[in-house]
Length: 108
Image (cartoon, rainbow, N blue to C red; front, side):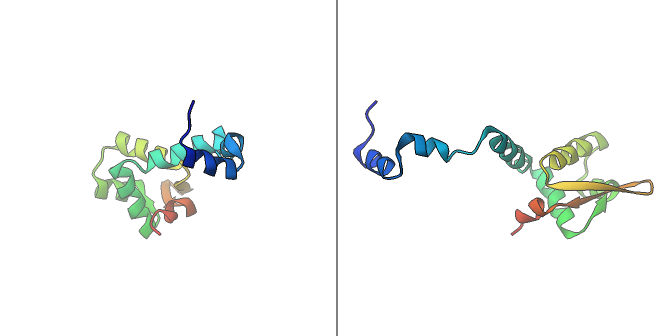
């Protein structure tokens, strides 16, 4: 396979193809990043994150704002939770969701 000269020169200067391949994250890291970015790929989940960036909320308040049925809201919250963007805690009979440090990072 012929590589363009300018690409080959830069590649050689950086240690070759093996060095390039060594800079690619491992499969576990890539899978985690895919979860993270996949969770951010939906407008409803971004809206939920924006709400939780203001304050921790119970599901009933999130539901009123995003106007989703329980099953859909539960799904979106689980995607966010699995991606490490939100966490939940029980307070008496309530489940309170809050944004994590990773979730806050997307709001700069």
